[in-house]
Amino acid sequence: MTRIRRGYIARRRRTKIRLFASSFRGAHSRLTRTITQQKLRALVSAHRDRDRKKRDFRRLWITRINAAIRGNQVYYKYSRLIHNLYKAQLLLNRKILAQIAISNRNCLYMISNEIIK
Image (cartoon, rainbow, N blue to C red; front, side):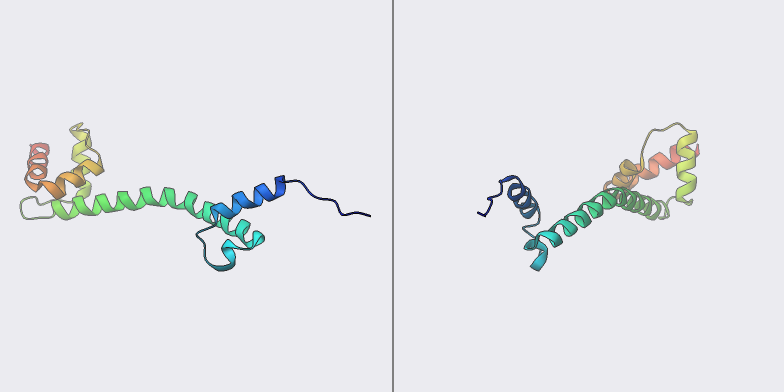
């Protein structure tokens, strides 16, 4: 019996997977089975870390705001500031407050003093 030549679909699928894993080291970029395993692992990590990045930035903003508030001129905590912001119905999120705390602390002090009054 003669040998059957296969089609191009499986080869096209493998080359597409290889292009995804071309920057991986060692067998993770050469062997098809390990490439598929590493591709799945990489996509899982990317999905997980997208949510983790949001958490990490929120923690960073809270730390920056708290460090700026506990300075010389303002004598209360982060939680009290956020509570007073909600009571005063000021729509400033943590990202904006952290940027104000870094770039212009006097503005943050003015905001906090207005909330206290």
